[in-house]
Image (cartoon, helix red, strand yellow):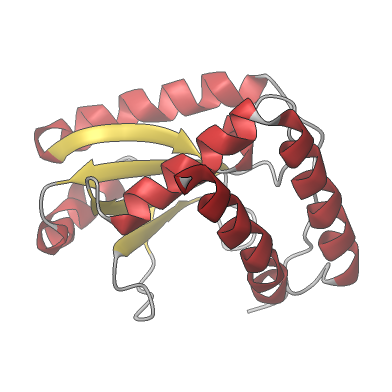
Length: 169
């Protein structure tokens, strides 16, 4: 597996439509399991630059049921990516490794994973100064870790934790 180059793009309002299209596709494949579906991550925050990958979170009643979603999601081109370190969610990718167009996160509705991702998104939506600060951090990390997405992601965690902490107050 070769290293994918980490590229950030300026905010693109097209991302909203891409999310809506994917939401429709996902609902057509697994609506019977879905309690809620949300656009998360940087592409969901107006004005925030991001990797041009649409992050989608699906809330279901029981995470053990996620295995039953692998086949129907594969019919709409989502590949299940086993990640044993993820105990609170299941991860699916649409597109080739390192070149995907969508990431799908399935977790139990209203569990910690769900709540914190929504808190983070909503805080950035409501505090543009924090969104700008986050984008500056991301640009700096993307330059430093251009070929190392895992480290890039890990280095963002303290900022994300701090925002979640503020959002809970």
